[in-house]
Image 1 (cartoon, rainbow, N blue to C red):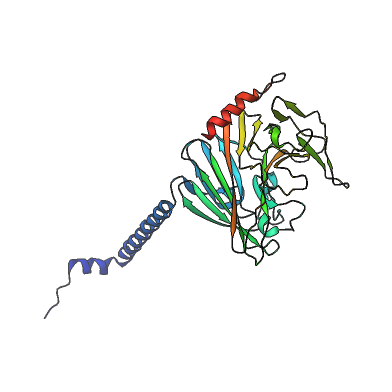
Image 2: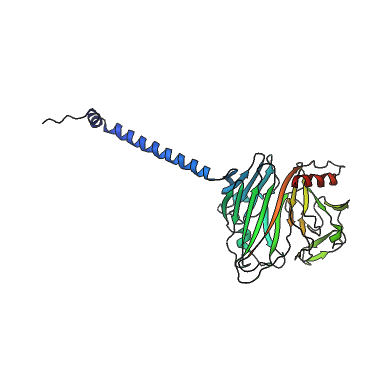
Amino acid sequence: MTRVIPIREQIVSQFPSFFRLVSVMRSTCLAAALFACQLVAFAAALPDGVRRVKVLNYPDCFELANGDTRVTLCHQVGGRVLEYSFKGRNALYLDPREEKWGTPGGPKAPSSGGRFDIGPEYLIPQRDTLWAGEWQAEAIGPRAVRLTSQPDDATGVQLIRNFRLAAAGTHLACEQVIRNLSREVKYWTHWSRTFAIHGGIGVIPQTLDTRRFPNGFVMYNQGAEHSIILRPTDPNVRLRGNFLEVRGPTRFPKLGFDSNAGWFAYVMPHDQAFVKRFPSPKDGVYPEIAGLTLCFWYPKAEQVPACELEPHGPRKPIPPGGTVSFTEDWYLLAHKFPAAGEEIDLEKLAAQVEREAQ
């Protein structure tokens, strides 16, 4: 019996190369479609206001955004904030050397931007794992990311930092959790070491009922003497009304304050005030050498073109397996930088901070 060959089989036998090409194209299109679906699914898996971006030479950083406010986080070196910006103006100082991180011959562990740490400064051991080690990063909600350090043998703790950006505005909640992994009670405390851009004016409200320093601040001489000046004077620090103003770099860069107001502002040259609010209980034990509640480190620009803004947390016992946490609330407020011969309206600034916090 003669077999009747179907038309399609006849065509395929006559043009085998063409049909192989069609088959490959069909498979390629299918693979591309599946890959596109995977990308969409991956993007959809991240909560609202969270995405992955490359910053400087750091890949896969998490970004939190809500319109005009943008926050980017670095988990590759020390669990910190690389950008905190409103309308495209970053309040944080980034060392240009960080652009070469990860390149042959480049710096291994530069650290600038929105840094955090634990203290007390002169008692805590070296902790490179926490300060410059690689951290884990995970999205935990809309505009929210958690960074987790590796366990640190030197201090016996692990650090967890939770960052949450509000749905609107500039409010960024920065929570640091200290988890005790050891078998003994630990007493480490929160220590923020944020590098803001250089050239701003610090405003620190005073709490006279808890004053310990005669002039409202002390000055650290961190040279060979390692001394603390108890009655410092400096042309760039002055008391005006119920506020201390730090108007620029000081004779010795590190200043310690005894205020328990729970906030300060740093008015920057691009007409924004970087505000930090934080708990500062009047009955707290502050274990830094001078018992200070916050610090500024304000060097000359040729040394480091940044001003370090440093809230300090009170000491609390951390039992084995236990945790303590401390939250800083950050804001960027529109506030005019004073021209030559002008002054900041300090009471107006304080009222503005109070409104924003509500």
